[in-house]
Length: 202
Image 1: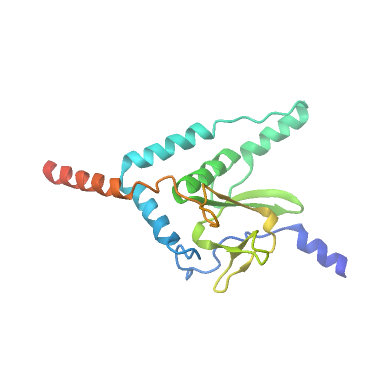
Image 2 (image 1 turned 135 degrees about the vertical axis):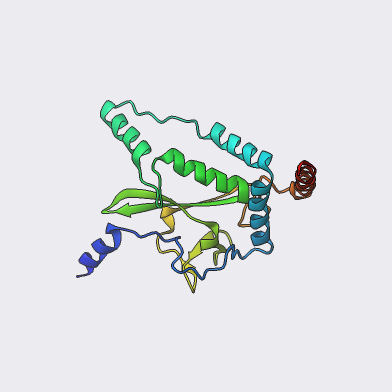
Protein backbone atom coordinates (compact mmCIF):
# COMPACT_ATOMS: atom_id res chain seq x y z
CA UNK A 1 0.00 0.00 0.00
CA UNK A 2 2.88 2.33 0.72
CA UNK A 3 4.33 1.64 -2.75
CA UNK A 4 1.01 2.52 -4.40
CA UNK A 5 0.89 5.78 -2.47
CA UNK A 6 4.41 6.66 -3.59
CA UNK A 7 3.47 6.14 -7.23
CA UNK A 8 0.47 8.44 -6.87
CA UNK A 9 2.65 11.10 -5.28
CA UNK A 10 5.29 11.12 -8.01
CA UNK A 11 2.94 10.56 -10.96
CA UNK A 12 1.85 14.16 -11.33
CA UNK A 13 2.51 17.43 -9.57
CA UNK A 14 0.01 20.29 -9.59
CA UNK A 15 1.18 23.88 -9.81
CA UNK A 16 2.70 24.59 -6.41
CA UNK A 17 3.18 28.33 -6.83
CA UNK A 18 -0.26 29.23 -8.19
CA UNK A 19 -2.72 31.25 -6.13
CA UNK A 20 -5.39 29.06 -4.50
CA UNK A 21 -7.69 31.95 -3.59
CA UNK A 22 -8.11 35.48 -4.86
CA UNK A 23 -7.69 36.91 -1.37
CA UNK A 24 -3.89 36.77 -1.52
CA UNK A 25 -2.69 40.35 -1.14
CA UNK A 26 -0.42 41.48 -3.96
CA UNK A 27 3.34 41.56 -3.40
CA UNK A 28 3.35 40.06 0.10
CA UNK A 29 7.11 39.80 0.28
CA UNK A 30 8.86 39.39 3.60
CA UNK A 31 11.72 41.78 2.96
CA UNK A 32 10.98 45.37 3.90
CA UNK A 33 10.07 47.61 0.98
CA UNK A 34 10.22 44.90 -1.69
CA UNK A 35 6.50 45.04 -2.44
CA UNK A 36 6.48 48.80 -2.96
CA UNK A 37 9.53 48.66 -5.22
CA UNK A 38 8.10 45.90 -7.41
CA UNK A 39 4.84 47.81 -7.86
CA UNK A 40 6.80 50.98 -8.62
CA UNK A 41 8.98 49.33 -11.26
CA UNK A 42 5.96 47.83 -12.98
CA UNK A 43 4.21 51.21 -13.01
CA UNK A 44 7.37 52.84 -14.39
CA UNK A 45 7.33 50.54 -17.40
CA UNK A 46 3.63 51.23 -17.90
CA UNK A 47 4.11 55.00 -17.66
CA UNK A 48 7.39 55.53 -19.55
CA UNK A 49 7.31 53.86 -22.98
CA UNK A 50 11.07 54.15 -23.52
CA UNK A 51 11.75 52.03 -20.41
CA UNK A 52 9.34 49.35 -21.56
CA UNK A 53 10.92 49.34 -25.01
CA UNK A 54 14.44 49.08 -23.53
CA UNK A 55 13.53 46.09 -21.36
CA UNK A 56 11.81 44.43 -24.29
CA UNK A 57 14.90 44.96 -26.46
CA UNK A 58 17.15 43.36 -23.83
CA UNK A 59 14.84 40.35 -23.70
CA UNK A 60 14.83 39.92 -27.48
CA UNK A 61 18.65 40.12 -27.57
CA UNK A 62 19.02 37.54 -24.80
CA UNK A 63 16.53 34.88 -25.93
CA UNK A 64 18.04 34.30 -29.37
CA UNK A 65 19.69 30.92 -28.67
CA UNK A 66 19.58 27.50 -30.25
CA UNK A 67 20.02 24.02 -28.74
CA UNK A 68 21.22 21.08 -30.80
CA UNK A 69 22.04 17.40 -30.32
CA UNK A 70 24.44 15.32 -32.45
CA UNK A 71 22.04 12.39 -32.63
CA UNK A 72 19.40 13.11 -35.28
CA UNK A 73 16.54 11.39 -33.47
CA UNK A 74 17.40 13.04 -30.15
CA UNK A 75 17.75 16.42 -31.86
CA UNK A 76 14.31 16.07 -33.45
CA UNK A 77 12.78 15.25 -30.06
CA UNK A 78 14.64 18.14 -28.45
CA UNK A 79 13.45 20.66 -31.04
CA UNK A 80 9.88 19.42 -30.70
CA UNK A 81 10.06 19.81 -26.93
CA UNK A 82 11.58 23.31 -27.06
CA UNK A 83 8.92 24.50 -29.50
CA UNK A 84 5.85 22.70 -28.17
CA UNK A 85 6.22 22.39 -24.39
CA UNK A 86 2.99 23.90 -22.97
CA UNK A 87 2.98 26.95 -20.73
CA UNK A 88 0.46 27.06 -17.90
CA UNK A 89 -2.07 29.69 -18.90
CA UNK A 90 -1.40 30.16 -22.61
CA UNK A 91 1.34 29.80 -25.15
CA UNK A 92 3.97 27.18 -25.71
CA UNK A 93 7.71 26.86 -26.16
CA UNK A 94 10.78 27.38 -24.01
CA UNK A 95 11.50 30.75 -25.61
CA UNK A 96 8.13 32.13 -24.49
CA UNK A 97 8.75 30.83 -20.97
CA UNK A 98 12.24 32.35 -20.81
CA UNK A 99 11.00 35.67 -22.21
CA UNK A 100 8.46 35.99 -19.39
CA UNK A 101 11.03 34.77 -16.86
CA UNK A 102 13.66 37.30 -17.97
CA UNK A 103 11.11 40.11 -18.09
CA UNK A 104 10.14 39.38 -14.49
CA UNK A 105 13.80 39.18 -13.47
CA UNK A 106 14.81 42.48 -15.07
CA UNK A 107 11.74 44.39 -13.92
CA UNK A 108 11.38 43.13 -10.34
CA UNK A 109 14.84 41.73 -9.64
CA UNK A 110 13.46 38.26 -8.85
CA UNK A 111 11.86 35.62 -11.07
CA UNK A 112 10.10 32.33 -10.30
CA UNK A 113 9.41 29.47 -12.70
CA UNK A 114 8.16 25.93 -12.19
CA UNK A 115 8.32 22.60 -14.00
CA UNK A 116 5.02 20.70 -14.13
CA UNK A 117 5.15 16.90 -14.16
CA UNK A 118 2.64 14.31 -15.30
CA UNK A 119 3.32 10.57 -15.19
CA UNK A 120 6.98 11.24 -14.49
CA UNK A 121 7.45 13.45 -17.56
CA UNK A 122 7.58 17.21 -18.10
CA UNK A 123 4.01 18.28 -18.86
CA UNK A 124 4.56 22.04 -18.98
CA UNK A 125 6.24 25.14 -17.61
CA UNK A 126 4.76 27.83 -15.39
CA UNK A 127 5.79 31.45 -14.75
CA UNK A 128 4.75 32.15 -11.17
CA UNK A 129 3.53 35.64 -10.23
CA UNK A 130 5.76 36.96 -7.47
CA UNK A 131 2.78 37.79 -5.28
CA UNK A 132 2.00 34.07 -5.04
CA UNK A 133 5.31 33.09 -3.46
CA UNK A 134 7.51 34.15 -0.59
CA UNK A 135 11.20 33.52 0.00
CA UNK A 136 12.31 32.78 3.54
CA UNK A 137 15.70 32.01 5.03
CA UNK A 138 16.06 28.33 5.92
CA UNK A 139 16.89 27.18 9.44
CA UNK A 140 20.52 26.58 8.47
CA UNK A 141 20.87 30.29 7.66
CA UNK A 142 22.20 29.59 4.17
CA UNK A 143 19.49 28.16 1.93
CA UNK A 144 16.34 29.96 0.80
CA UNK A 145 12.98 28.24 1.15
CA UNK A 146 10.07 28.85 -1.23
CA UNK A 147 6.71 29.28 0.49
CA UNK A 148 3.33 29.38 -1.24
CA UNK A 149 -0.36 28.72 -0.64
CA UNK A 150 -3.31 30.51 0.89
CA UNK A 151 -4.56 31.58 3.30
CA UNK A 152 -1.60 30.03 5.15
CA UNK A 153 1.72 29.82 3.35
CA UNK A 154 3.76 26.63 3.59
CA UNK A 155 7.01 25.40 2.01
CA UNK A 156 6.38 24.01 -1.47
CA UNK A 157 6.40 20.19 -1.35
CA UNK A 158 8.69 19.81 -4.40
CA UNK A 159 11.24 22.64 -4.30
CA UNK A 160 13.43 20.90 -6.88
CA UNK A 161 10.79 21.69 -9.51
CA UNK A 162 10.85 25.44 -8.77
CA UNK A 163 13.47 27.76 -10.22
CA UNK A 164 14.20 31.07 -8.48
CA UNK A 165 16.65 33.67 -9.78
CA UNK A 166 17.76 36.88 -8.06
CA UNK A 167 19.44 39.67 -10.03
CA UNK A 168 22.34 41.28 -8.14
CA UNK A 169 20.99 40.60 -4.63
CA UNK A 170 22.33 42.77 -1.84
CA UNK A 171 24.54 40.99 0.73
CA UNK A 172 22.32 38.82 2.90
CA UNK A 173 19.20 39.50 0.80
CA UNK A 174 16.99 36.82 -0.72
CA UNK A 175 15.40 39.04 -3.36
CA UNK A 176 17.26 40.58 -6.26
CA UNK A 177 17.68 44.15 -7.45
CA UNK A 178 15.61 45.49 -10.32
CA UNK A 179 17.31 46.83 -13.41
CA UNK A 180 15.20 49.97 -12.90
CA UNK A 181 16.39 50.58 -9.34
CA UNK A 182 18.01 53.95 -10.01
CA UNK A 183 15.27 55.29 -12.29
CA UNK A 184 12.33 56.39 -10.10
CA UNK A 185 13.63 59.97 -9.76
CA UNK A 186 14.45 60.30 -13.46
CA UNK A 187 11.21 58.60 -14.43
CA UNK A 188 9.18 60.97 -12.28
CA UNK A 189 10.67 63.88 -14.25
CA UNK A 190 9.95 62.12 -17.55
CA UNK A 191 6.34 61.49 -16.52
CA UNK A 192 5.94 65.20 -15.70
CA UNK A 193 7.36 66.09 -19.12
CA UNK A 194 4.99 63.66 -20.84
CA UNK A 195 2.05 65.08 -18.89
CA UNK A 196 3.02 68.66 -19.73
CA UNK A 197 3.48 67.75 -23.40
CA UNK A 198 0.05 66.17 -23.45
CA UNK A 199 -1.54 69.25 -21.94
CA UNK A 200 0.21 71.51 -24.45
CA UNK A 201 -0.97 69.28 -27.29
CA UNK A 202 -4.56 69.47 -26.07
